[in-house]
Image (cartoon, rainbow, N blue to C red; front, top):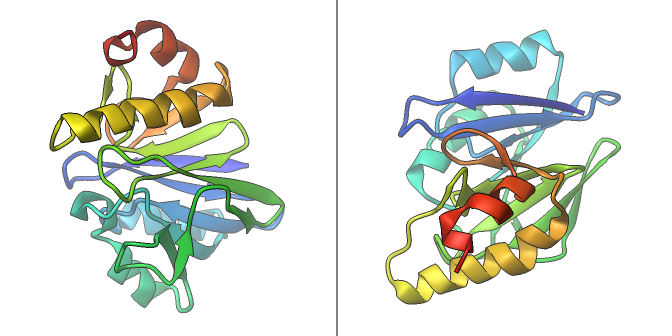
Length: 186
């Protein structure tokens, strides 16, 4: 599997390119913008961009969708059913195929009602649900408790060795967040 991280200029958002090393099929997760560095990586690695995965519909995670649609004819956008950007809905329990890889889908509301987490092997792409030492902002207490419930019921059970790739900030592991994240200690 190929995973490449890109730090975007829009709100210092993380975007990721994930590809099957055998088939060269690729997805782009949360393209807040479509940068020349991302395009160069796709070309250098000879990747075939098949789809875009959106963890939630905030502009800093979706701003590059149109540019990608223009550059890669036929690219499909997958997001929560409530999002307007999508070509295909994804919901809890769905599995997408990427070459020989499987992408598991988890609905993880809290930060937003449309938050989705994508899991590929031992890698978790959770958008703004969970950060190293923190969690995503919520508009009220009800959403905060829903976010903590999503993390505890959907993310923590994935296992301590899972590597978490958040929408902002550095990567972390489930073990580190389970043991030390102050928002999960209550």
